[in-house]
Image (cartoon, rainbow, N blue to C red; front, side, top):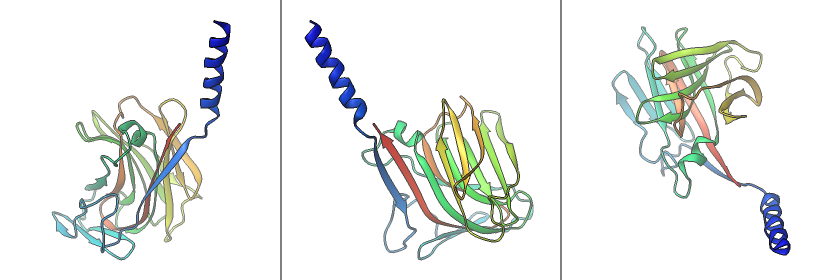
Length: 213
């Protein structure tokens, strides 16, 4: 009996010593062939928005002076990945754009629940500002934001969202943490890109990293 317990314990130690296997999926926005977003992008006018797939970038434009229109494209599933793996992925993209009002910005969406529309959103603008939004059951609210030295005005910025302790989520600009938040109301799994009008916003190198022990 003791020998059997020892064998089981040794097996658990071996499993614990196996490093987590990370997998990366990159959207290069190549018009010649679909990436992980496949055919979800709109290439042309779509309501108040206009989308254009370029060679290595995706451009979203909305000149509505009222502002506040939100457009996002998300990845619901990846072959071979579970919903839990996507919910706990690290997602990043390089964004640059022109914000024509205080509400405008470009960035990422995280843990979107397609059934109830809840998610985290993280955007920056060309004035050096950032904002973190929570869209819960009661609607959209900004939970933190302002200017931050990590955000480069009038320049490309790499945004990253990754899981932290418990249900916390960490938000980074150019590798520097600018905020963290958590909520049991945000319980989806889908990551993606997001823009808030008015303005013109470009996205490059959208990347998802999943890790499974």
